[in-house]
Length: 99
Image 1 (cartoon, helix red, strand yellow):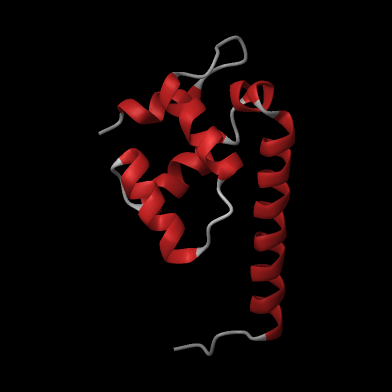
Image 2: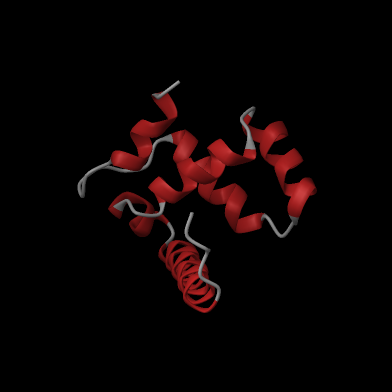
């Protein structure tokens, strides 16, 4: 555990490692949804979908990933920002009861 996280913490001068490049390539070609994508993640990487998405989330914040595939990374960042905005709107329109 932890070895695959090194790629996401690359500083500005480092290139992606093989694992990180494979994650980005998988995400770029992946048009699968739900369970099919989760199964593909398990088959390709041997990890859970939740772990994959944590790694992907760290990865798209790295300058090395942006240099490697700027269009994909920018699209994924926009998608993440849109989901966060949707969650924020929902929480403002449907506040949870106190208690």
